[in-house]
Length: 316
Image (cartoon, rainbow, N blue to C red; front, side, top):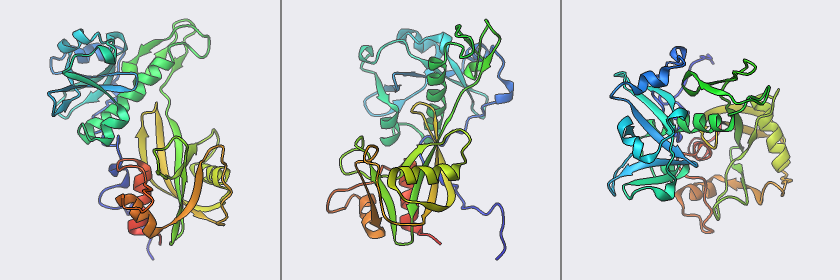
Protein backbone atom coordinates (compact mmCIF):
# COMPACT_ATOMS: atom_id res chain seq x y z
CA UNK A 1 0.00 0.00 0.00
CA UNK A 2 1.29 3.45 -0.94
CA UNK A 3 1.36 5.98 1.90
CA UNK A 4 0.65 9.55 0.88
CA UNK A 5 1.43 12.20 3.47
CA UNK A 6 -1.41 14.59 2.68
CA UNK A 7 -4.27 12.17 2.08
CA UNK A 8 -7.26 13.78 3.74
CA UNK A 9 -11.07 13.99 3.52
CA UNK A 10 -12.55 16.78 1.36
CA UNK A 11 -13.44 18.73 4.50
CA UNK A 12 -11.05 18.46 7.42
CA UNK A 13 -12.67 17.19 10.62
CA UNK A 14 -11.87 20.34 12.59
CA UNK A 15 -14.33 22.26 10.40
CA UNK A 16 -17.23 20.30 11.89
CA UNK A 17 -16.79 21.72 15.39
CA UNK A 18 -17.94 24.97 16.95
CA UNK A 19 -15.63 28.01 17.22
CA UNK A 20 -13.40 26.72 14.38
CA UNK A 21 -14.71 28.70 11.39
CA UNK A 22 -12.59 31.83 11.75
CA UNK A 23 -11.62 33.11 8.28
CA UNK A 24 -10.25 36.54 9.18
CA UNK A 25 -6.90 37.72 7.88
CA UNK A 26 -5.13 38.22 11.21
CA UNK A 27 -2.08 39.97 9.66
CA UNK A 28 -0.05 38.85 12.64
CA UNK A 29 3.18 40.14 11.10
CA UNK A 30 1.75 43.67 10.78
CA UNK A 31 0.43 44.35 14.30
CA UNK A 32 1.97 47.68 15.24
CA UNK A 33 1.34 49.11 18.71
CA UNK A 34 -1.12 51.60 17.21
CA UNK A 35 -2.98 49.05 15.05
CA UNK A 36 -6.17 49.32 17.13
CA UNK A 37 -6.27 53.11 16.77
CA UNK A 38 -5.61 52.80 13.04
CA UNK A 39 -8.38 50.22 12.65
CA UNK A 40 -10.89 52.31 14.62
CA UNK A 41 -10.18 55.28 12.38
CA UNK A 42 -11.64 53.31 9.46
CA UNK A 43 -15.38 54.12 9.24
CA UNK A 44 -16.04 50.50 8.24
CA UNK A 45 -14.62 49.16 11.53
CA UNK A 46 -16.93 46.87 13.50
CA UNK A 47 -16.56 45.60 17.07
CA UNK A 48 -17.82 42.70 19.18
CA UNK A 49 -18.64 43.50 22.79
CA UNK A 50 -18.12 40.93 25.54
CA UNK A 51 -18.34 40.81 29.31
CA UNK A 52 -18.46 38.11 31.99
CA UNK A 53 -18.33 35.28 29.43
CA UNK A 54 -21.19 36.72 27.39
CA UNK A 55 -21.49 38.16 23.91
CA UNK A 56 -23.62 41.29 23.52
CA UNK A 57 -25.97 40.72 20.59
CA UNK A 58 -28.22 43.30 18.97
CA UNK A 59 -31.63 41.80 18.27
CA UNK A 60 -34.99 42.67 16.81
CA UNK A 61 -36.57 39.67 18.53
CA UNK A 62 -35.70 37.26 15.72
CA UNK A 63 -32.22 37.83 14.24
CA UNK A 64 -29.02 38.53 16.17
CA UNK A 65 -26.17 40.83 15.15
CA UNK A 66 -22.84 40.71 17.02
CA UNK A 67 -21.22 43.72 15.30
CA UNK A 68 -21.26 47.37 16.41
CA UNK A 69 -20.01 50.44 14.62
CA UNK A 70 -17.56 52.46 16.71
CA UNK A 71 -20.16 55.22 17.10
CA UNK A 72 -22.68 52.76 18.61
CA UNK A 73 -20.66 51.52 21.55
CA UNK A 74 -20.58 54.78 23.51
CA UNK A 75 -23.97 54.11 25.09
CA UNK A 76 -22.76 50.70 26.24
CA UNK A 77 -19.75 52.12 28.01
CA UNK A 78 -17.26 49.91 26.18
CA UNK A 79 -13.80 50.13 27.68
CA UNK A 80 -11.98 51.31 24.59
CA UNK A 81 -8.56 51.00 26.21
CA UNK A 82 -8.93 47.22 26.22
CA UNK A 83 -9.97 46.84 22.58
CA UNK A 84 -8.16 44.19 20.56
CA UNK A 85 -7.74 43.78 16.82
CA UNK A 86 -9.18 40.53 15.49
CA UNK A 87 -8.23 40.96 11.83
CA UNK A 88 -9.60 41.96 8.46
CA UNK A 89 -12.24 40.77 6.02
CA UNK A 90 -11.22 40.10 2.41
CA UNK A 91 -12.17 43.67 1.47
CA UNK A 92 -9.98 45.11 4.22
CA UNK A 93 -12.75 45.87 6.71
CA UNK A 94 -11.24 45.80 10.23
CA UNK A 95 -12.95 43.77 12.95
CA UNK A 96 -12.23 44.18 16.65
CA UNK A 97 -13.40 43.01 20.07
CA UNK A 98 -13.81 45.07 23.23
CA UNK A 99 -14.81 44.50 26.84
CA UNK A 100 -18.18 46.13 27.50
CA UNK A 101 -18.59 48.51 30.41
CA UNK A 102 -22.36 48.16 30.80
CA UNK A 103 -23.40 45.22 32.98
CA UNK A 104 -25.72 42.62 31.40
CA UNK A 105 -28.61 43.48 33.69
CA UNK A 106 -28.44 47.14 32.60
CA UNK A 107 -28.77 46.52 28.86
CA UNK A 108 -31.74 47.77 26.82
CA UNK A 109 -34.27 45.27 25.45
CA UNK A 110 -32.69 45.49 22.00
CA UNK A 111 -29.42 43.96 23.26
CA UNK A 112 -29.06 40.51 24.81
CA UNK A 113 -26.01 39.27 26.71
CA UNK A 114 -25.77 35.55 25.90
CA UNK A 115 -23.07 33.20 27.17
CA UNK A 116 -20.63 31.87 24.59
CA UNK A 117 -21.73 28.24 24.97
CA UNK A 118 -25.39 29.10 24.29
CA UNK A 119 -24.42 31.26 21.32
CA UNK A 120 -22.79 28.28 19.59
CA UNK A 121 -25.28 25.62 20.74
CA UNK A 122 -28.24 27.68 19.54
CA UNK A 123 -26.56 28.70 16.28
CA UNK A 124 -27.22 32.39 16.89
CA UNK A 125 -24.39 33.66 14.69
CA UNK A 126 -22.58 32.57 11.53
CA UNK A 127 -19.88 29.86 12.04
CA UNK A 128 -17.16 32.19 10.76
CA UNK A 129 -18.21 34.84 13.27
CA UNK A 130 -18.29 32.18 15.97
CA UNK A 131 -14.61 31.55 15.23
CA UNK A 132 -13.88 35.26 15.64
CA UNK A 133 -15.78 35.12 18.94
CA UNK A 134 -13.42 32.41 20.20
CA UNK A 135 -10.42 34.50 19.20
CA UNK A 136 -11.75 37.65 20.84
CA UNK A 137 -12.96 35.95 24.01
CA UNK A 138 -9.62 34.23 24.56
CA UNK A 139 -7.59 37.40 24.01
CA UNK A 140 -9.83 39.55 26.21
CA UNK A 141 -9.68 36.97 29.00
CA UNK A 142 -5.89 36.71 28.75
CA UNK A 143 -5.36 40.47 28.83
CA UNK A 144 -7.71 40.79 31.79
CA UNK A 145 -5.93 38.10 33.81
CA UNK A 146 -2.40 39.26 32.94
CA UNK A 147 -2.56 42.94 33.83
CA UNK A 148 0.56 42.68 35.98
CA UNK A 149 4.03 41.57 34.97
CA UNK A 150 4.77 38.02 36.11
CA UNK A 151 8.48 38.91 36.36
CA UNK A 152 8.40 42.00 38.60
CA UNK A 153 4.75 42.41 39.58
CA UNK A 154 4.30 45.91 38.15
CA UNK A 155 1.36 46.90 35.89
CA UNK A 156 1.84 45.90 32.24
CA UNK A 157 0.54 47.61 29.11
CA UNK A 158 -1.34 46.17 26.15
CA UNK A 159 0.64 46.32 22.92
CA UNK A 160 0.35 44.98 19.34
CA UNK A 161 -3.43 45.13 19.31
CA UNK A 162 -3.79 42.90 22.37
CA UNK A 163 -1.30 40.18 21.37
CA UNK A 164 1.49 41.32 23.66
CA UNK A 165 1.77 42.89 27.08
CA UNK A 166 4.81 45.00 27.88
CA UNK A 167 6.11 45.86 31.33
CA UNK A 168 7.54 49.40 31.36
CA UNK A 169 9.16 48.74 34.74
CA UNK A 170 11.45 45.84 33.81
CA UNK A 171 11.07 45.67 30.02
CA UNK A 172 9.63 42.14 29.94
CA UNK A 173 7.20 41.16 27.18
CA UNK A 174 4.43 38.62 27.69
CA UNK A 175 2.42 36.84 25.00
CA UNK A 176 -1.04 35.23 24.94
CA UNK A 177 -1.31 31.68 26.19
CA UNK A 178 -3.31 28.77 24.86
CA UNK A 179 -3.94 25.83 27.19
CA UNK A 180 -3.79 22.50 25.28
CA UNK A 181 -6.32 19.88 26.34
CA UNK A 182 -6.31 16.28 25.14
CA UNK A 183 -9.81 14.90 24.59
CA UNK A 184 -9.97 11.27 23.55
CA UNK A 185 -12.34 8.52 22.57
CA UNK A 186 -10.96 5.14 23.60
CA UNK A 187 -12.53 2.61 21.25
CA UNK A 188 -12.44 -0.81 19.66
CA UNK A 189 -14.45 -1.93 16.64
CA UNK A 190 -17.36 -2.90 18.88
CA UNK A 191 -17.42 -0.42 21.76
CA UNK A 192 -16.15 2.89 23.10
CA UNK A 193 -15.40 4.28 26.54
CA UNK A 194 -17.48 7.21 27.80
CA UNK A 195 -17.50 8.90 31.18
CA UNK A 196 -19.83 11.11 33.10
CA UNK A 197 -18.78 14.12 35.20
CA UNK A 198 -21.01 15.38 38.02
CA UNK A 199 -21.05 18.72 36.18
CA UNK A 200 -22.73 17.26 33.07
CA UNK A 201 -26.38 17.67 32.17
CA UNK A 202 -28.55 14.76 33.37
CA UNK A 203 -27.91 11.59 31.38
CA UNK A 204 -25.01 12.93 29.31
CA UNK A 205 -21.84 10.87 28.73
CA UNK A 206 -18.77 12.15 26.91
CA UNK A 207 -15.14 11.52 26.02
CA UNK A 208 -12.48 11.71 28.70
CA UNK A 209 -10.27 14.81 28.67
CA UNK A 210 -7.47 16.54 30.54
CA UNK A 211 -4.85 19.24 30.25
CA UNK A 212 -1.56 18.39 28.56
CA UNK A 213 1.27 18.96 31.00
CA UNK A 214 4.65 20.64 30.30
CA UNK A 215 7.12 18.30 28.61
CA UNK A 216 4.38 15.89 27.55
CA UNK A 217 3.40 14.80 24.05
CA UNK A 218 -0.22 14.75 22.97
CA UNK A 219 -0.10 10.97 22.71
CA UNK A 220 1.30 10.52 26.20
CA UNK A 221 -1.29 12.92 27.62
CA UNK A 222 -4.01 10.74 26.08
CA UNK A 223 -2.47 7.66 27.67
CA UNK A 224 -1.94 9.29 31.07
CA UNK A 225 -5.39 10.88 31.35
CA UNK A 226 -7.19 7.72 30.26
CA UNK A 227 -5.28 5.64 32.80
CA UNK A 228 -5.76 8.20 35.58
CA UNK A 229 -9.49 8.59 35.01
CA UNK A 230 -10.52 5.10 33.91
CA UNK A 231 -7.62 2.75 34.71
CA UNK A 232 -7.43 1.74 31.03
CA UNK A 233 -4.02 1.52 29.36
CA UNK A 234 -3.78 2.92 25.84
CA UNK A 235 -1.55 1.73 23.01
CA UNK A 236 -1.83 3.49 19.67
CA UNK A 237 -3.09 7.08 19.58
CA UNK A 238 -4.20 8.95 16.45
CA UNK A 239 -5.06 12.62 16.09
CA UNK A 240 -8.43 13.48 14.55
CA UNK A 241 -9.40 17.15 14.99
CA UNK A 242 -8.97 20.24 17.17
CA UNK A 243 -11.26 22.93 18.50
CA UNK A 244 -10.64 26.42 19.93
CA UNK A 245 -12.44 26.50 23.27
CA UNK A 246 -12.82 30.00 24.81
CA UNK A 247 -13.28 28.89 28.43
CA UNK A 248 -11.10 30.84 28.84
CA UNK A 249 -8.38 30.08 26.24
CA UNK A 250 -7.98 26.38 25.55
CA UNK A 251 -7.32 24.30 22.45
CA UNK A 252 -9.09 20.93 22.49
CA UNK A 253 -7.00 18.28 20.70
CA UNK A 254 -9.22 15.36 19.74
CA UNK A 255 -7.75 11.86 19.44
CA UNK A 256 -8.71 8.21 19.25
CA UNK A 257 -6.98 5.76 21.58
CA UNK A 258 -6.64 1.99 21.28
CA UNK A 259 -7.22 0.18 24.61
CA UNK A 260 -4.77 -2.50 25.71
CA UNK A 261 -7.15 -3.79 28.40
CA UNK A 262 -10.84 -3.37 29.16
CA UNK A 263 -11.23 -3.51 32.95
CA UNK A 264 -12.42 -0.08 34.07
CA UNK A 265 -11.04 1.23 37.36
CA UNK A 266 -12.58 4.70 37.48
CA UNK A 267 -11.37 7.65 39.50
CA UNK A 268 -14.64 8.49 41.24
CA UNK A 269 -13.25 11.79 42.48
CA UNK A 270 -13.21 12.92 38.81
CA UNK A 271 -16.05 10.88 37.33
CA UNK A 272 -19.52 9.97 38.45
CA UNK A 273 -19.55 6.98 36.11
CA UNK A 274 -17.45 5.44 33.34
CA UNK A 275 -18.43 2.51 31.13
CA UNK A 276 -18.18 0.81 27.76
CA UNK A 277 -20.97 1.46 25.26
CA UNK A 278 -21.74 -0.55 22.12
CA UNK A 279 -22.12 1.13 18.73
CA UNK A 280 -25.92 0.74 18.52
CA UNK A 281 -26.39 2.18 21.99
CA UNK A 282 -24.16 5.15 21.22
CA UNK A 283 -26.11 5.75 18.01
CA UNK A 284 -29.27 5.97 20.12
CA UNK A 285 -27.54 8.46 22.40
CA UNK A 286 -26.55 10.61 19.42
CA UNK A 287 -30.10 10.48 18.03
CA UNK A 288 -31.66 11.17 21.45
CA UNK A 289 -33.65 7.91 21.32
CA UNK A 290 -31.91 6.01 24.12
CA UNK A 291 -34.47 4.17 26.32
CA UNK A 292 -32.78 5.51 29.48
CA UNK A 293 -32.55 9.03 27.97
CA UNK A 294 -28.75 8.90 27.89
CA UNK A 295 -27.16 11.42 25.54
CA UNK A 296 -23.84 12.61 24.14
CA UNK A 297 -22.59 16.24 23.90
CA UNK A 298 -24.37 18.41 21.32
CA UNK A 299 -23.27 18.87 17.74
CA UNK A 300 -20.47 21.42 17.54
CA UNK A 301 -18.59 19.96 20.50
CA UNK A 302 -15.45 18.07 19.53
CA UNK A 303 -16.55 15.18 21.74
CA UNK A 304 -19.64 14.87 19.55
CA UNK A 305 -17.45 14.81 16.43
CA UNK A 306 -15.22 12.05 17.84
CA UNK A 307 -18.19 9.94 18.93
CA UNK A 308 -20.14 10.38 15.68
CA UNK A 309 -17.06 9.62 13.58
CA UNK A 310 -16.57 6.33 15.44
CA UNK A 311 -20.26 5.39 15.14
CA UNK A 312 -20.51 6.17 11.43
CA UNK A 313 -17.06 5.19 10.20
CA UNK A 314 -15.83 2.63 12.72
CA UNK A 315 -12.16 1.73 13.04
CA UNK A 316 -9.92 0.14 10.43
